[in-house]
Length: 266
Image (tube, rainbow, N blue to C red; front, side):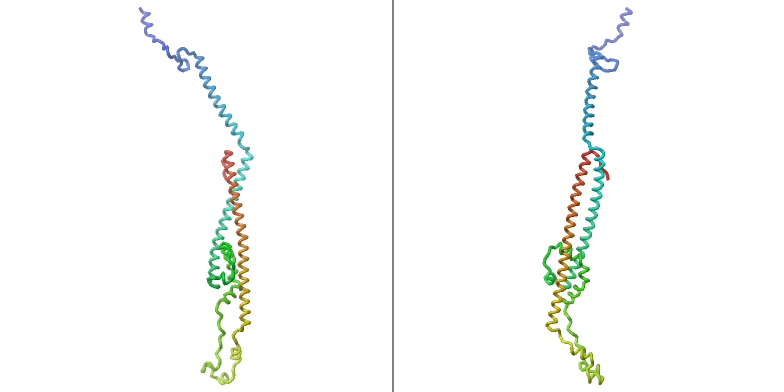
């Protein structure tokens, strides 16, 4: 009787599931060795995954360029950056020079219009050239052209020549020179004014030939300026092509550095 009461208070063990010492749930018929074996297989699979990851990282590390090559790329990058900055500064200077030459061109065109008229190209017998070349050449030598004696003589040639002024003789204005000496005999000044004559055809032809020679000098000067400006323009074009080539080379080097997986900094 007493034994039956004491046994009655024990709970019956679960048939479906049981807990081992490690706290891992297992089936009723599974032993501790089976549980450990299953856990070991899972750990082996995780180790295999880690080994594959390590192998992939080692392959990437083997494909990475050496440190010397990366440093060489960095130095190349800095050199190209400095070259690009210098090219940009040169381009800015060229643009400023172009603007200054445009202003000088306008001033020269106004001066030529004032001296030779609106159709100064036809008057000076200047052949038509490209707008860029004529603009640059006119701007480059404006000061020399305006201040040269050729231009001054050209302005004197195109301006109307004053007629020779006849000086007043003794008898032309009574009451001004009414002394007996002035009325009786002509003075040397009156004699020299009396000897003045209009220029002959030979003198006019000589003046015309001199003016044409001066115009030819101006034309040759402008043509020479055109040639020099063409040479300068070709140099600028070559410089721009070189800058574009260096820019493309710089971009390729940056792409190579980024493909190498290294951050490049100036």
